[in-house]
Length: 282
Image 1 (cartoon, rainbow, N blue to C red):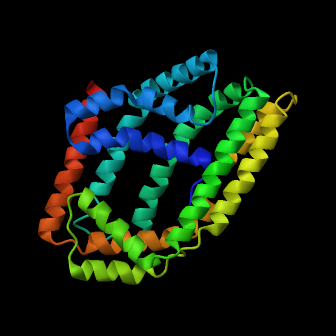
Image 2: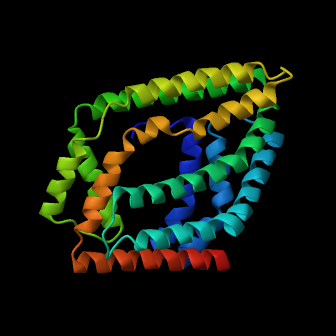
Image 3: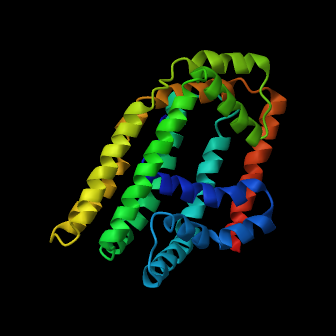
């Protein structure tokens, strides 16, 4: 569905960092990983510029607070979402069923967005002119890297890319797809628009506006401008344009699971759910 905005990447990283230990199925490794979640998040933020000791301390404090909030408030919600996913099998499902789960997952991402936004706005007020330019360089390098990656991606068949990704996700969830299922995925993948240029251009425009706002940090309306600009990334109209095809692929794949595949799928989800329980109790 295209490249995601820098700020939206943060919430994906947050989810991935916390889900990896849960999905790994190893409660001990998961506990160690989750206990270091604040460190991983802080190190991610530190990539944007060279920050002062006080600024780094603020970031570490914020990510630690996030870790506690996430454990108390969000982990139970993720478990509930896993339960809902497990209920997709053994019955007739539609793209609307899948869309509802996507929407609930997006709300969880938005909750993390809402946690970090005021902290990021406060942090940005402490930036120096040099740090703003470092962040600008980071943005520009990321855009250039995305454009180069997109050039390479265009050499590949879009349907094959989607099919390969779906197969990897299925294996991740304990399912080995058969040839009939793979062929159906390939057919549906043709409906997915592989042009990511508009997403990259949109991101580049968002970056430039954000840097303009940061350069005018002394403006009395800076907090409102920064907060509104960060919050603007919660809109999903552009993403939804290509989402329906992915919903169709998921429905077709889940509906075609045989008994053996379904058992492995449910077993994997149950393992994830139990791992989340252990993280909550730790």
